[in-house]
Length: 207
Image (tube, rainbow, N blue to C red; front, top):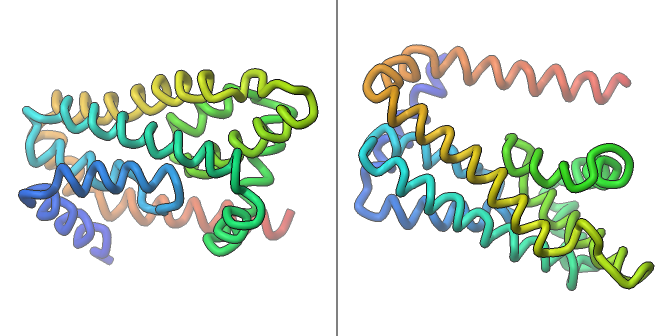
């Protein structure tokens, strides 16, 4: 029952490693391309371990994450079929990508980029889908419109910046009190997330 407490302690120890900043940057970069582990897993423990460096860690996370998203965008733009398409299937992101395409087209448009940047939605799916749809738009109309790279990068910086700086701010200002709260409730929060995900999956299967 203390699985998440164990993971939390591992992350705290890793956050104090001499190469922790490199781990953070690499993880943030590749997460926006294909990696399933979100930057928050490294960012939050590192901010807890070194609160005086929270702003620096947030800055590095934003920069490397957006750089990764830039690469993901152009992977979708230039070489989606067949190389990236196979990876999408291998990582089981196909359904998520189809959903994002519908959101881009019918409901949220460019706002979907901000939603993906600010929320836990896998940003790699947003980046690759945006690049793919931009390429399709250029082929059909001669312009990428609001899915062009300039808009994508701008909105990515806003969304990623708000998310990671907010996390850093909460931990920086909360200090030891925040750490005590996390230690006390990390297992409950972790299992609550697992239950919510399971309920969502069950809902999608039934409906």
